[in-house]
Picture 1: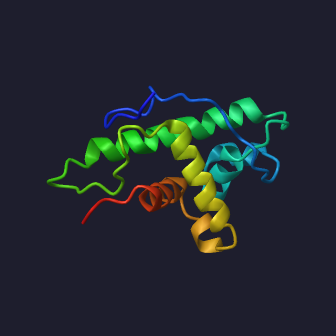
Picture 2: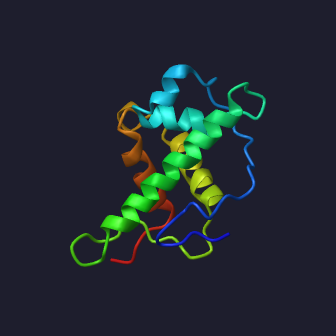
Picture 3: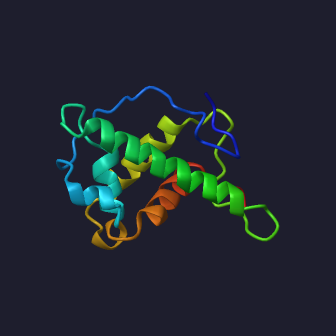
Length: 130
């Protein structure tokens, strides 16, 4: 299902994960850093914590985009992310994982709060016309 400007929740596409990252640990679920979220979002299907990790990832992505959509009315706060109506939650996860993988060696970016990492990744994938 496509993303809406109001909710990503309707977009629960197939889980197509094949990216290996560090094993998920309990501390990753605290979601203190972009690295924590990357660990959850890129967890291997073989990891014993795959299901809770991937649902935590998807929930965080959904909440971030819902908040962005709610506060960016175009007048007071301009949109940072301009995704097409056809974008899915899985597209958002794939964009974030790809962005994080590309920036994995940048300690400053990976130590930022995960909401900033998500917005950076999605703004990179779905930039707005300025």
